[in-house]
Length: 295
Image (cartoon, one colour):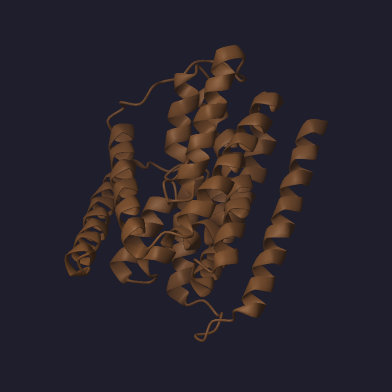
């Protein structure tokens, strides 16, 4: 294996160890009254969403929709729960795709670093947001996700080129774009589809997007999650369920199933996500209606 990839793997594993240690310390200090043992539903959500995440569907929008429809997590804790719970499955995805897909290492490392910087700044902001602001932000994120799923099915996304690395102005544009996507990821806007669009617009081979987007998420989610963990802005039990169910889902999708016809599934996801977006924005409106007037 390329020595540069080995160094990247070592850095990813070190980041993951720091994340796990911080999560464990936080849970010991703030052990939830309901206990830590995740329910079968929470683990099933982790398995299913990360299974299809590995195949390219994405996990944030479907998970958010399930959380909202089943009332599993308070709205203001959904961004933190998504980032903390899906972090370890995403690390597993990144290890697989960085190993098997060739992409320029300088481009890969720098785009990952940009996304991590964006996530660190974004998480510090989102973790302190009140419920209504999170509801509005996530409602908008779900609408954007539904639009991207529909565009994918209608073949309206850019086709990309053949490049496996970026130089000059395109390299700078990639850094800025992935920085912004890293910041938005902490609000619950999945990085996969926007990153695929970004690298395609910059002339890269769409296959090169897989190690970039999964590597970005694998580094930025543990780093961004540290802010949510520090502030307690997540649901520990549900996050653990996502992680426990998610890692097997990734491995089965990557090494056994490998591919599935996903068009019909995406249309189903569009319907569910649109419903959840409406519910999220309706909750925000109701909160505004009952808020006492200022002054």
